[in-house]
Length: 313
Image 1 (cartoon, helix red, strand yellow):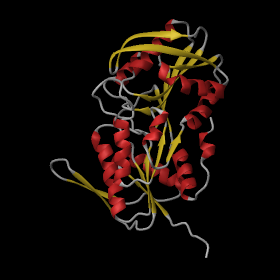
Image 2 (cartoon, helix red, strand yellow; image 1 turned 30 degrees about the vertical axis):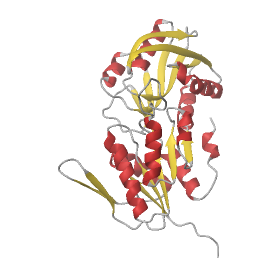
Image 3 (spheres, one colour; image 1 turned 180 degrees about the vertical axis):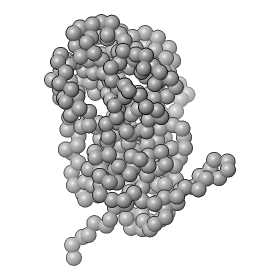
Image 4 (cartoon, helix red, strand yellow; image 1 turned 120 degrees about the vertical axis):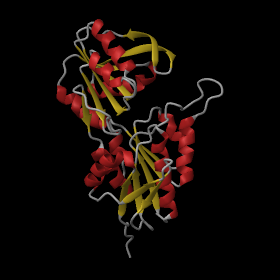
């Protein structure tokens, strides 16, 4: 008898329910039923309200801080393991705690590796994520990792703008590889910002490497947190003669007074995905959906098909 691939089931953590519904619809399935009970002290317990025995399940949830988002993902994975799910794929549109991917000074943790080990210890058999802060985080896992690129979402939009004299920019030296990849796909020039930090989220000095005079600039980064780097870079480039400055950032963390900084900056547009739900609206922010990308990869994984086409710029 031929091998029959069992039905896949899709569930979502609390924060990612809206994105989970979109992914499930694009996948061609209903979002599974999970009930979360909460105690008065804040402790919570997720419960699958349907059988998942012997199935492949996908659990969708970004793990950005606060810690309850990561904890909910771990509890969902553990519950699935104990309910005898056959395969447990953690779908992390945004892999949180990723900025701590190395020891940059003595006596600090490598949180990204710790999170990877926690996901595996809980019972995840596969990880699907998008635009990790650092590519080497894949090496922290012993299980397969499908690392998707949001460039497949952003590039068609950038091409649709038909910008003359397009220049791709990296807001720091660490993002130069990403900027060069975009510039190669768009056949454009590249400039790089060199910045020095006084401390986390505080820039003491920024310089521009390259010429932006008469150029329409697009800054490329994996995330936007306080928006300090992007807005400072945009203002600097406009001072140096740029015609316009946009930014594409996969993960819109947007903490603190980020929205105020965006509104007061010379940044024309911030283009993001819906990997993290926005806390408020802004006329300067354009959100591009990532549900179709994840649904396609999840379907290929479930049916044992290649996903390499999704990695092409």
